[in-house]
Image (cartoon, rainbow, N blue to C red):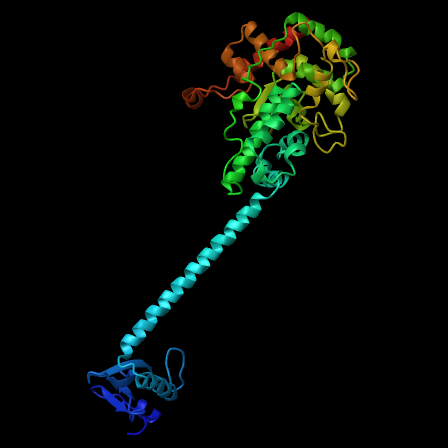
Length: 445
């Protein structure tokens, strides 16, 4: 037959393979078709190798409409012509030819893939280089959004310290250009001001920020890594300042004339009589203070260890809470800020007390209290935290068990076994301890 027809291709299958063939194209092979007993309709290109061996090379599957994955008679004929043309050029083994072509295609594809991988690596390296060119100020904002935002104060204290003591020195520097000397320049400036503890805190924050940058491949190495924290401001010393009974009496005489707000003066006595942290008091809300039931609940979000702490207020403590209530009864906070939108800054009382304990040779500070020596005591400078320590010390001196005093301080039990198995609340003993402390203070003042 000269040509295979669609009618032949769609004929009913027989009990064995049925082969159809066209005339050879230019004498270099011909299109053939096979209809199998199962109904498959397949195209082949039949040609002879130089050795004389006849090869039947598969082309594809027949479909009258040539839908996806199949071919029409016309498409099969065109493909047969292409193969005959290749055979005519001297390619005597089409199988080997196409295997070589496939190998070449795979090699080309692999080469292109390698080129794309290298190109992406170059782009990533350039992006990393550009990221490292970010300024320290940019890095701080990134750190603030990802890490500092999860802290209790949303990173407000860290931001205050950076804006005051770090960014003026390092803010415009590219992160990749920060060296050890830049960091020590910041800490040395703080040490020169005599604020050793602040220098340690700022250094710790800078180290946290640079390690954050290393974790995100913004820089390869932490520039603070080779600096020992112990070398910044010397070894930490544990404060042990405790006010004596005579000093408490003297403080009671000095406080009214120190130019303090009534609420600040009351904070001194509330902190001393409850052993609370000053930040816990300044962030307290009236909804947690019950002056009828003599209780003050410090919620978990306000306590240092993240656990709620219930204080039974002595008559002494209640009398001072009432002074605060008279001044701030319309606010939801016991110590509201100026705009009554939140509580005051936790540093407020600490600064007011510190401003009034400057030695004569230090003089007074501009825009600060003129009564720079109003609260000086014989034992030296004292802080709100020293009042907490003093209250606990008085408790144990009056016979309160150290275990109970520790509970009044809301300290976390360090012994894991005790923490797990000893579940006694000590509520009754703690109430008695606060009452004993309150009566002692009342007698002193």
